[in-house]
Length: 145
Image (cartoon, rainbow, N blue to C red):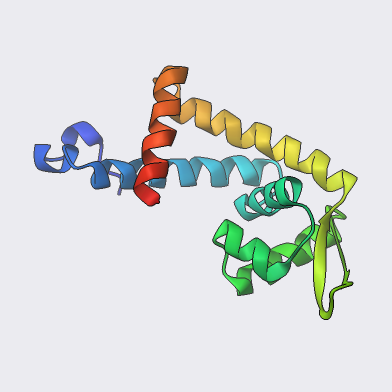
């Protein structure tokens, strides 16, 4: 059961870790709902975004960049390949592994998923100004290293 912030003890409400945890749980739920509504998984967006930004990569490297376990990566890549959003091809430098490449359809899908994720960001963080959001991102980036 989700505890309303104003009902929680003041000692909890004053702890950044508690607030971050509650915000994370809420955003994860809303993103999962948004992705389900468009027939996707949040991992799809992460994988497509990594390929868009960094270019072709191995399955292992994409998983490392996105913090996705390799067993989940295999299933997600299979789904994305079936949907023709990615392409697998032998790595010319190491034929034992495949390089994963974003397709044109995958790029379009990534843009659509980005729109859905951005909508959730606006819903959750709409109470903050653009400057406050930037500051929050900067501070959280420093905290996680």
